[in-house]
Image (tube, rainbow, N blue to C red; front, side, top):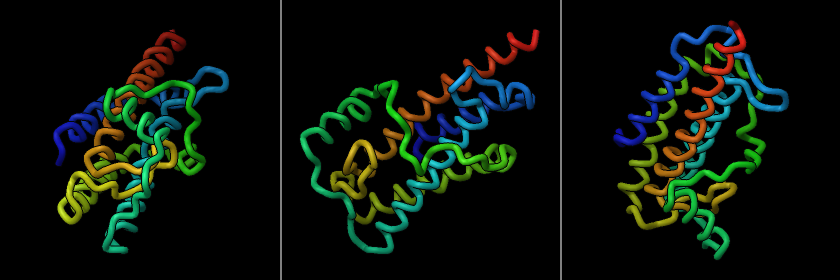
Length: 172
């Protein structure tokens, strides 16, 4: 497994380990709770898995030609490692109310499965071919997809830690 994704998986598991149901569901008005943040991540992993399965089934890369705007967005997130705030999540990755226990138990396996499919596509098509389009960033290579998930996961890891701390403070 890619070491950065393995580290992310471990960090996310650690961030939610032992959270009480109160910590799991606490949130600021209009913001996601920890269960919803983790579900969002889970849905991004399952969405990426489905996309890479389509690439493998097609037997060819499905990435389109990037626009100048796509290149700039990818540079910011993947190149500079910065996840801008205020960007609305794609509808397919919005929390839907999946059982938190299921998400908590399965998200780590989804990261592992996603990484395996990315590696499979990279082995077939190389690391410089834009294999699949991201709904916000446009076409990305396999290494860019990995880096995107690392940057995105770190962004939400910080949120999970803040939610946990705030929920603990509120409980006192």
